[in-house]
Length: 311
Image (cartoon, rainbow, N blue to C red; front, side):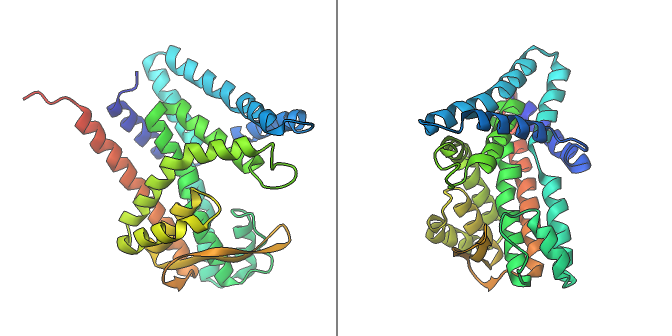
């Protein structure tokens, strides 16, 4: 049984392993999961009752690995089970990967190397960056850092605190399926409905805790106001609070025009202050990293409070 002190210890270990090693080198396990999910989608995404088929496909993709992880954690010896929990959290986390992607963008923008910045930014966002200027690239990188802080770090930590390694694994796989199937396109509008809604549900509490963390670690009053007044403008119920609070905390403006799949979209403006620029990319990453320290400190404090005191 995972006690809260043990969860805090294992969570800290998982974050440390991610910090030291980053994502697994070579063939990432998510690549295998993505191939498996693609085969499932090809088998089910046709004909009628696509929402029901999408839900079944989600269950077939996510539940078997999560149940296997849960079973192994239950039957393995104590120290082997602890190692498994840490390994699963390492698999689910992307803190070092986020840093490894965002820092080079900040450096390229700082050097006014637009060609390199465009190439690097295209690796972390789905918008077209081929014609983006420095301001658009900075805005995209800040948005990516803030939103992926929630998706790649805090959501996994939250579900690890709730259900250990299998919980973090389930969150990461559900988030991956949302990224694969959760599009409002003719192909995925109905089939991907379940993947998108389940990800929204699993991310609802973590996203608001992330937004609160961003708010507490910067311009708190502005962040709360932006969250309250602007979050509902964004089409994602979870990205809205995260990015509005993060932008308000940093006193920058994000959102606005961007090209997706060849079409220009005008997204709502979030935040307050000056338009995002090169120096704000690093500031956004630092906000995410300070929030990670805050989360680990909170877990440790909660673990200490849960230990009975014998006077």
